[in-house]
Image (cartoon, rainbow, N blue to C red; front, side, top):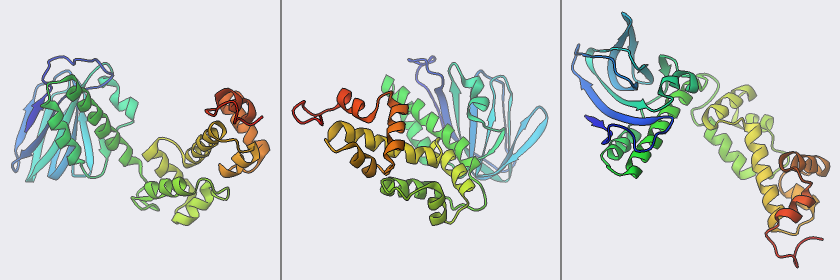
Length: 275
């Protein structure tokens, strides 16, 4: 299966645009060779084995890893003895040549199981001739690329695959508890604190400490602008009972003291605001 963007050039130029995508199933020992083109192509094996050849060097791959060809590199794809199935997609756009650096992806990169449902959605978007279809295809392309690069850095030892999601869920439910910190969370999840930091940061792009702090800060700012609770009570309800620290935190992030921030941004009527 092969699907191209319905416009030769993208309707809206983005740093990365999706050009095409497909699902190939090669017979045993089948060889596919293609001349170089001006796009970045990412391959995500689904089943079987095979190898990508580049500069005369064979790169064996299996399900659970991804491989890429840069613009200007001839494609030389060879299936193994049991055949080979893989998904692929291509990017053009202003930064397609920077993908390895921008996303930290190695030529052969451990990535986990292929997200076939996303590739199927991508195929449907590439059949949509509207601008919305084209933009949605690019969104899915970004998501696939981020999955390919993020999954690889999850440590193989010391962490269950769901550790990041479990940690986030616990923080979401208990961030107002002042006793919650990353050390306590790591103990609860039975992982080393450093492992938790790496896994969480890989999945969500922020460390668990940053995420916990942002959840508390967001609630604090919401309570300051939507209630007349004393500042000390807002601090406690946000999981930050040290009022002096709470005030410094609000000032550092907003440029205003808690009371000044409330006076400037309150969503309440003047009659109900805290004096």
